[in-house]
Length: 587
Image (cartoon, rainbow, N blue to C red; front, side):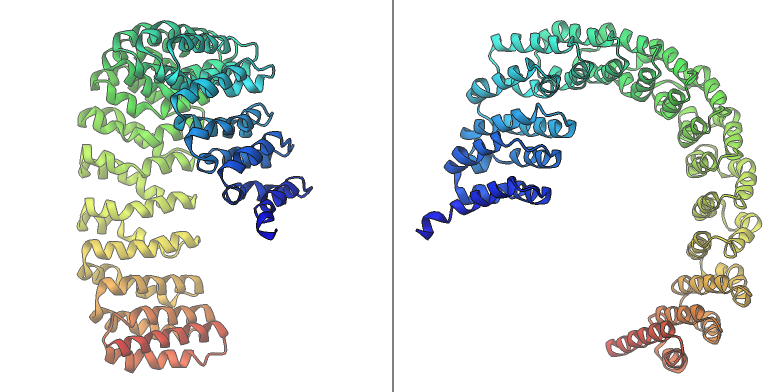
């Protein structure tokens, strides 16, 4: 008897938990559906579990979402693709609920199941489901149906294909804007499955209706459809059908639609080809760059470099550069910031002469912008300009601005400059660097912000790697060691951090003669934070210096620190001693 009852136990637990008031228990049982299905076997899952789920009228969206997700991967548990149709009824119910994320997940699961179903099952079960949802009384069902047409259409016989196109056209003219929005969103997927002959007639007719919709939320989704349809049509059809729509949308009365065009314009240009872009889309793009809404200008400014790559340099200089100059002094900081993040990429497109004459003054004005994000975006892309105009011109025109930014009141700007310094150093060479930027690198080690001091210590190490230990011995080490007597313990800690980073670059000889004595001296500091950092630095020096130095100098210092009154100092000193023991054993 026990053997017969055992398979019943999981379904009984599931039913109990699904009716439990505790949502977590209900959720857990839904997430264990696959385990329960395995226990029940294919046949009982089809005959008992799935019907039970179809009748389950749980009102909690989280439970319904979990169920929609689980059912999408349930084909193996119902006996394979030949029985996949039994999963459709519970998902059909979930397609009609009010909560959007549940419906979306149900549609996603239906698409996954539909993609695996046999052709005759699609015709017998899946297509009728799509038609039922499309004719649903509640708009939620009709919204969900739009995401299923691309799966249903591929396997449909010719008569049903005609019917499906007609139904989709009706959904695009539905009274509810939410249904039309869903139809506009899914038009690209549906169009990709439709035959070329019907694409030019039926689909383009549907598309034109959507582009003239009175709701801007529908029209802006139709903009995305432009790019998707443009890739499916022949170039000449694209110019005839898609181009006029794009030009009209760029002058749409709703800023959201214009914003969408500005965002998608590069993809649209790819669809219609470079020739058409030059003649028809340049004026539309210029209009967007001069739009009266800041959001539209931000989207357009962010695409300026990509757009210029499609054009030849003459057209860019003639049409786009005047707009770029205007945007560099735009009243919105976000527009200037968007421009600053891409404007450097225009230098390779325009060439050396145009960059020097036209772009450099814009770079300089943006480098002096009152908002830190604008300055940051310019600094982070300076190397793109250097490749075009060369380091001499860059140093003459931009270096004074960089030096000024090195002392910027916003620490993030100073941080961006520090991170750019090693690249700048490699391009400028030793002589120029020493004259102009050497003092700045030392100054940052005493910055009030920890992130700057930390970055400055890393910067010093990278410079030593770039110019070599001999240069570092002359220009970095003496100045770093001078700071060890600073009255503020945080600055003394920064120097210890810098020493630990420099030691591997400088090698054992300089580390022993110059760096180690300073660290040993710091172990007598009155501040515990300094002393436990000394223990950390000594631990990092153990693999670098000679074993005799470890025995004579480092270990005695660590033993002394291991008896310090402060618990943290003792901890790190003992950790370093253990590390020293391990090194000795390995050698």
